[in-house]
Amino acid sequence: MLSFSLILISVFAGFLGSILGLGGGIIVVPALTLLFNIDIRYAIAASLVSIIATSSGAAASFLKDNLTNLRLAVLLELGTVAGAMCGFLIASYIDSSFLFLLFGGFLFFSAIMMFRKKGDGHTNIDHPWSSQLRLSGEYHNEKGELISYKVANVPLGLFSMYFAGILSALLGIGSGIFKVMAMDGAMKLPMKVSSATSNFMIGVTASASAGAFFLRGDIRPEIACPVAIGIIGGSWIGARIMPILPANTIRKIFVVVLVIVSIQMIMRGVKS
Image 1 (tube, rainbow, N blue to C red):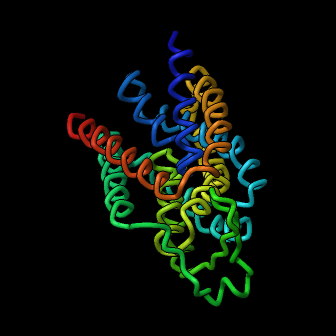
Image 2 (image 1 turned 180 degrees about the horizontal axis):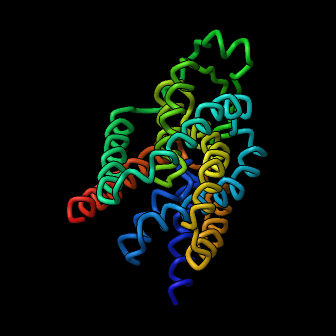
Image 3 (image 1 turned 90 degrees about the vertical axis):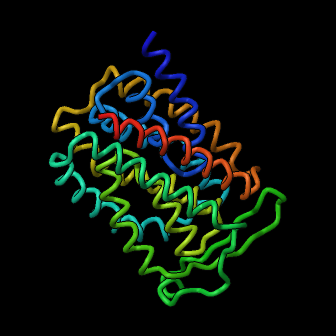
């Protein structure tokens, strides 16, 4: 019965994760800890496994739809992988209550930043690094129109990804929230491109820290397996729905999810 419940929740998590580029960890970690009273370190480890599953389930579809910016993803992964390894080194020195508060605080901050931004607001000015590395691209929106975009503030985006990698290892969320924020806010990418590129990247980032959690014995098969199964199914569905959703709808869903989960996690951290 527990495994079936984990699968159902994970399907929903994978669906939202693939649409928003968050990897599903934003739903899985609170669900495992708040609903099933699973230790947060085991929940984080299972979440990292599920993030890899989400990335695998959604990446192929987004590549086919030309939403994922592969060149940019490879560049930004240099920062996230380095940050993920640093995050693992300091994770064992932080207690569970602080992790809850850190998780909730950053989610709430993310929600405020996303709510303040209206529309897609992508830039028409290419950063010099973007021109040299040919990072700009194009995609078809929900109306079938071809949308071209440029990439701004590449150094700032790369620097932000290092901290996103640290948070990935600490919080088990694939740092998709912060990847999307950096690409959507600092680098001025369209929301759909940010989400799709984040989906591609989170699997690599999570892999860098999941192996370390495995060696430490934090990955429990009875938890991670049903979570991964549900995540794969949900991300497959979400990857087919996301291209036809308006960008503003995706942004509104993003904000609502972040606010709800951040409040839950902060309350748990205060009670711990």
